[in-house]
Image 1 (cartoon, rainbow over the protein chains, first blue to last red):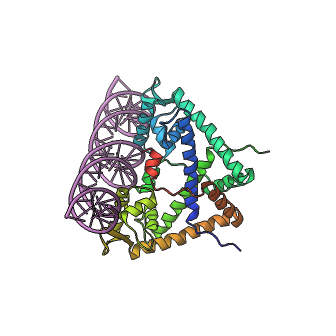
Image 2: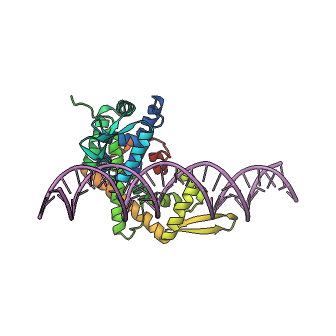
Image 3: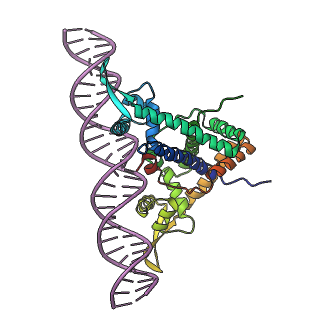
Length: 156
Length: 156
DNA sequence: CTATTTCGACAACCACGTTGTCCATCATAG
DNA sequence: CTATGATGGACAACGTGGTTGTCGAAATAG
């Protein structure tokens, strides 16, 4: 008869697990020629996707305002990961597209994430890892991903 | 023969799981008379603990600078959750202590976290939940908890 | 007694989110 | 064709949360 751990450990470990993976990703990403990419950037680039998008739509996908999205776009454009192109069909729209460098960082991220997952599988066993993922899927379901972490965490 | 999910799903689900639990905590905490407490506050109050501490030590425990810690203290003092008392043995030190309200919020948080964990146990089964916690413990080990989420997430 | 360290406070700065406003452009109704 | 409304993007202001830098007061070491 084992005693259950206190309830507060679970959220702590979940956050820690997230950090370990993200830190691992960016350590390796830096080694592979992308030292400037920050955790947020990855999510933004992912949200832009191969087909491109606009600032408004980007904000919707990330769960933040268009203004906040525009700030990320500006930063990523400065770093050379994004490109803003005019839309010939609509003079208001500026279509955001990944540059070659942006696409490269995204491709490397995917490979690194797979490698990190493989490390977890080595330690935990494939079955246990699948169970972990399945359980998290069951508990988080269709909860939308929101990028408003700072404001949410801080209480803005 | 099932195909493995992409590696990026794991960190996403971990973060989502964290959010689900924290959002659940604060929804219930608001119902129980603590609508002003924000996610960060809980961690700060927890770090202060029943014995009290100083701003410098608090910063060390949370993985942030003493200045950042002092800002949280000021906010929590304004909300009536913390109290700064002079240290008779050292005129430089101001000892931070939980007020009755602060201790109450902490006690309620612990109970709510336990209840949320029980919900997870109902859905996943006790064994699966224990395995999930054990696996996260195995992968995060002694990684220290850091409260510098905004800066880290953003890249400060 | 003097030199160093430590604690708390103040100020400035940057990152990231928010709301509010404004203009140019597109879509639609009359 | 024109007036009206909706949409996309830019600009400004603000709040929070982190950082570094500085400084004075108090404790401690020599």
